[in-house]
Image 1 (cartoon, protein in one colour):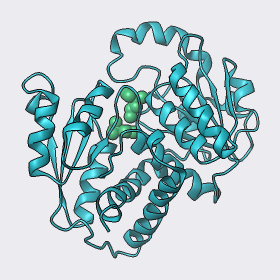
Image 2: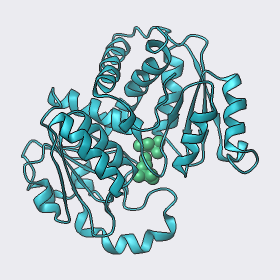
Image 3: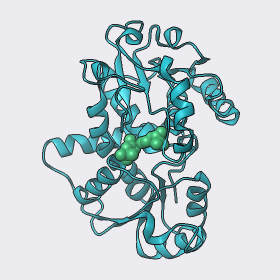
Length: 309
Ligand code: CP
Ligand code: NVA
């Protein structure tokens, strides 16, 4: 049985399998022919934090594939407070066929997977956001037609989204550059693992504090919020440090003229990204959001259909 805890755990073949599955299921969806490959299957969705995209795209993906999703709100089971994480996993996995969880502590995802009888999907933790990373690779592949050698630059906070992007990019042979303020970089362990993946795939990793140098020649410019969910106490401090890392027209003018701009959303317009960029012809933001639906289907098919076939 497989889980989706981190993109680092997937081989490049498995990543490509999910991307191809997403492609196929998107084509079927477009032609109005969703097949009920998850008929009768139920997903339990544990949320400790808010969500629009992750919640709705998983819910709709399950429905369109013939199954059903149950939303479990933060107050419902109070993961690790009302009941221990292992006991929640033991009980929930007797009822449902797959568990998706959005948590504060990544360790909760690891513990859920350890004690669950069914696949567990990380729907965002303080460490990573693999479903987002997979949907982003799918979007870049769809827009550019290839992934190997693509130059992707991430500007801003080296957060959970950045970690998943880095792992995906280095598994798939893309060049990954990150520009972040001093003190807001990637964990050393993440960089070490990504360097190992890069050696295998031919990716190049560049880390800098200079956003202009970072976006030079970029085909994809990616950003995310300066303050992630759970970091609200650091908001003022972060807002003082991050403005030079805003993705605006001036910064974008240093990227390739046909560069696409990505953001996992929700965006704080006027902070990490301006309206001018978010609503420009460069923006892939809403195709990217739509592709969460198709990518979730690829992930579900990989974990629940293809693994047991
Ligand atoms: N990008 C993303 O995960 O959005 P939500 O927080 O709305 O799920
Ligand atoms: N880095 C953001 C992503 C939200 C989808 C957060 O964790 O809040």
